[in-house]
Image 1 (cartoon, rainbow over the protein chains, first blue to last red):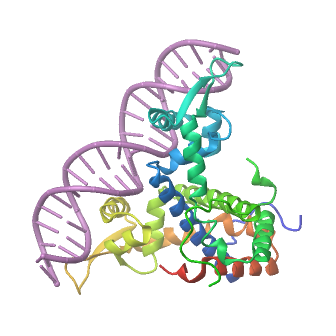
Image 2: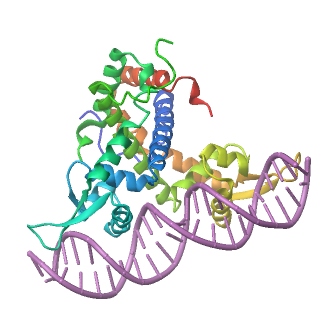
Image 3: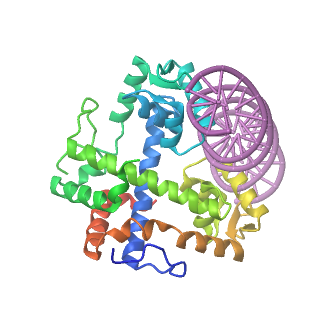
Length: 153
Length: 153
DNA sequence: TATTGTTATACTCTATAACTATA
DNA sequence: TATAGTTATAGAGTATAACAATA
């Protein structure tokens, strides 16, 4: 609690080191994002579809919850799940506890696709492969510290 | 050069540490992306518009080059630049060297907007502020090693 | 002929608002 | 009345294909 938590609006200056790190992170983001879209496309999925499928591939989730996790409006999820359902990768199930709720669940084929998708994410092999185990450990700890408490949604 | 550069197609298994780092990077990506979109929206720009504006805010670029950098089809840039031009943030200039080429250039207002956008990227202040200078240096070096040669496009 | 930028088209994602069926 | 999911709509991004101007 050393610094005030209200960001001073008149402090646009950031030290060069931080700027360099931000730029590097920007590069990582662009690269990761690209790879994700590419991996999704290899399975004829859009990025959004792949994200939804990945999200529910472990356990089913109400439409509302998917929207919250993806930070988009619930109405969008309808269409995305529609398309996934049309391809047999996802199905809608009733929620026994609340008849208003529909649970989006991956089918067997959907789970297989999600798994293949996860494993085809080359990001793990290629860029991270350049780091030693000790370096990866350091990177992990730095990222965890950076992300702090709010890693969980 | 310790490992073969042809990725074995039958090696889906990745060690848990690497998986953890990949997941953390995924979180960073989502967070950074979100903040970027949000910062753009504060200036009534979409993410794509903000990226194009940021790209040409330093020096003008041919439409084709913008498409290459953004990894999208040139035809898309036409529309994005149209909208930026309609708002007076960008203008199209002829290229004296090649009359087929149009250079997209930021106007004064466009440059101001791009600058404000850069400075409003809270990512520098918030998450990176949790790290000491020594830690930021370590993070920078790890990211640089990770990204390797292909940082430049 | 090849290249640059554009147009036309179709699809997806996105937010907003109004609707329905439950609670 | 409040909530979950949907529908309808409009705007934006995207890829593809065809086109005009220029090289």
